[in-house]
Length: 249
Image (tube, rainbow, N blue to C red; front, top):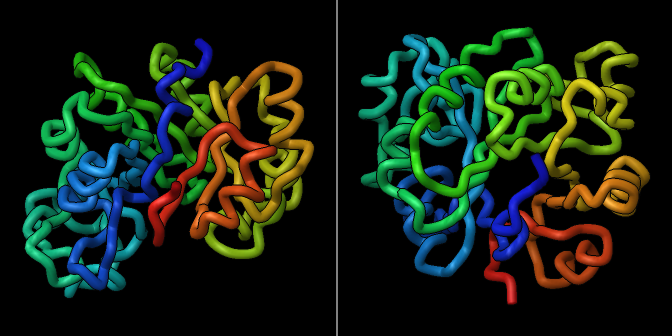
């Protein structure tokens, strides 16, 4: 399928419209409500719980945003759902609960986090949660194996590949050079066939984002934009922005 028009109609708030200084933290229901009130789409992340639930949370570990520590995937969904985020009243939501709250009020782009270890439970659970729901949803991941799986099991859900021109940190940086080149140069295209490309704004312009857009009309989303100046620099090379830390004009 091709990317839906709503994917590029309004800027997308990175992990919701979060302002920690005001007690509103990333990937929470409060941040989602603020994005909706501002007229923006929402990007969120999902991680897997110990009992196989998709939880709306960015980090692999709990330490940065909760009073707990250790991997998210070692805690059950019920326990995670009781944890305060940033000391606020918000708790870690399940994806199902997040979707129940948002409904069809704004587009939602869901990033499926990956450790690049072949574990596809989170992707499968995410697709299960979306099944039968009304709304404007898109899925994306850095992991080509996940995006390839989405192409097979959820062909009617818009999917995107997230990428950057070099990997100098994080889980992907530990991959063999040939796998990294596959990611930076989109050599997995025949397997993944993404409906959109989500590329790091610091790397634009680059061939990996330019060629699909120019030759196949595949829209480019760029992240993470943190100022109006960055918006102006990125827009000649992108069709959509994912932003945080300011409100785009």
